Amino acid sequence: EKGGWSSFMRKEVAEQPDAVANTIRGRIVDGEVHIPELESFGDDELRGVRRITVVACGTASYAGQVAKYAIEQWARVPVEVELSHEFRYREPVIDDGTLVLSISQSGETMDTLMAVKYAREQGARTISICNTQGATIPRESDAVVYTHAGPEVAVASTKAFVAQITALYLFGLHLARVRGTLAPEALADALAELQAIPAKIETVLGQSERVAELAHWMADTRSVLFLGRHVGFPIAMEGALKLKELAYIHAEGFAAGELKHGPIALIEPGQPVFVVVPSPRGSANLHPKVVSNIQEIRARGARVIAIAEEGDAAVLPYADEVIRIPLAAPLFEPLLAVVPLQVFAMELSQAKGLDVDQPRNLAKSVTVE
Ligand code: F6R
Image 1 (cartoon, rainbow, N blue to C red):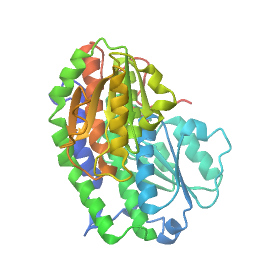
Image 2 (tube, protein in one colour):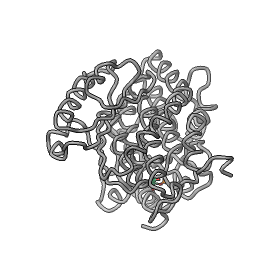
Image 3 (tube, rainbow, N blue to C red):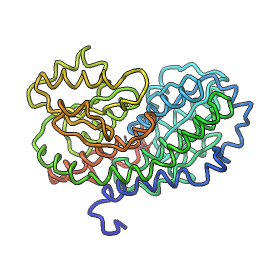
Image 4 (cartoon, rainbow, N blue to C red):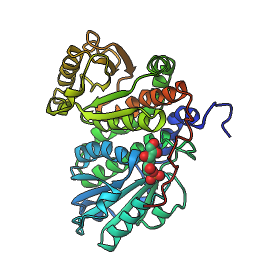
């Protein structure tokens, strides 16, 4: 079933353009989001939502964290993202304005299932984002929006992650339309950005050989740090998680703004640091702030690998390596920036002779608490 690929992960990384395209398919009709699965949630109910609580674990929780930025910006609803196992055991505040959104590739993760059941017992309405038809979590939810990534076999999640962000973005745009929080042109622009993502992921995949070379040079590395900001922050954490799982290397993801509050003490000569650089076209001047973070760590000897958009020359004097991603609206960059991080972890795993599809100690679906 690997269809000529050397591993399921390699195949699934390559399938990401399709995972996004298939998750969009049929859900944008005449320039509008159309999610028939959400029919049981009438527009009035969606207008009445005062708060969204996302419950998920691992990579799925990072998809939730990315979507938090987009849904808050578009639909003006506060979104909190909770690890399912933390949510369940701390008497969370749930009222009838709370919508609980679960995210799970397998639909069987016990902690997430328990969180959903608990939320329903407390009277919350629940929607699940799931990749597995008929799984337990969707059956326990009021509605399900399926991701159509296709079966994910490798233990480490890749194509399901980009499909989760895609489904969450469609949901966020639907919510924004119903609530009237986004001008029609802005909504159309966002949908067009989403539809352009599969081809852009293909472009990023085109650089995989360079990323592989980088990984092969770094096969003896003992620790790698990842920095990001805004939507790049959960991507930094996802890059670190992939590296831990697949290459058994100590890795941590930080919010770049947090550097001077502690983590910068870790920087010593030769320390590899991946930096997800926000677009210079983004608002709030995040780009120069991250460039100055790069200068700070470089001055302390860090080896900087920047993931930056095409044409961003500001990073060139300070980065040891630059991996380019095509231009996209800032909220859509995570769907591109995550790809080289997945490839890096996969290649490093392979360079170390490890089993990339079945990392030690891990199972594809965690059906125990
Ligand atoms: C990481 C990974 C895990 C899963 C997590 C949730 O590569 O695969 O962190 O994302 O166990 O699994 P699901 O999405 O099936 O609930």
